[in-house]
Length: 418
Image (cartoon, rainbow, N blue to C red):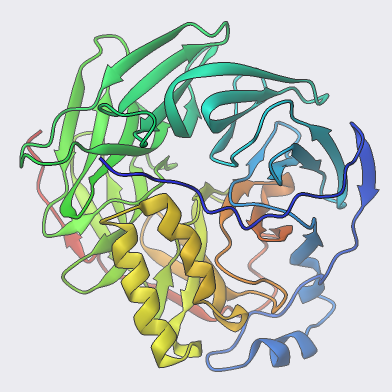
């Protein structure tokens, strides 16, 4: 067992009243995507009126690693440990006090359009009007997803104060909770820890697991009707990521790690266990960000361009990312910020047929594009401490950094026997 604590870089904002409104100025209204080898400042200086409509950044002061959007596509995010914020596409923010300490873990829109968020031993719930309620969790929660009715699902981990085996939990809106133990590690040793969770196209729940210091990672399928859990161990020395989403192609997608090539990859798996992995464009590493599915049926996540980083930083980055997949994954995710210069930050777009598009981010972004959610008009909300913003997903306006189609995936495994 090991402790996955969140290192909180956010500072608490000055005390604000409930539903206090502030219009935050955009730091930048967009930068042209960087040409290979061009500095971020030069790209900003070359920004055109067309490009200005694509990057919209707003400084919110104390935010955040996770983000969610409601049915109106407003963005919701934690602000420090005592507030939750809601932002519309114009940058207008409503802030609401939280009557408990918000540790700032995963957030998701429920089927009731409320925003649900994981906060250790508490599950928080925010209505669209800003009413906050809470539920006691059965364990230490970090990731959650909405269910198929009036319910949510979440994964738990163990801590020094909450020992025992981790599990997946189902919670109805009235707080009634049922837990499901994670299958044991067949290699012995430490039990697998569940990470990201999503509802699948087959009405099952899918989640990723890892074991500390071991290269044993799985994608798990939980059938809510029978409570059966089926394990799909990753093959060929690869490991799954912190997050998992159901793609528009009915496959499950996660950003993972290939220990053979010492680099990040994208993993896609069918509901029958057929796995394909996709190598990112040269010099790019995916960061431990959320993954958003855009209205254009593409997947979006954060990345960094190592060609624009000092050699020592690249070495440290590889080391931290590898540790993220073998040790304290949530905590080490935060350590990446120390190593990444703003000039290397990028937004990665991947279509389900393996077409990568990379867009260099404005220099005001500090690192990693942590949070990702679908925004208004198909745009992509993102968070990058201390900034919340969105990227307008009209790709006809300019040439990206890299635009390449993979003729075939890097690997394709046969059905994995569960």
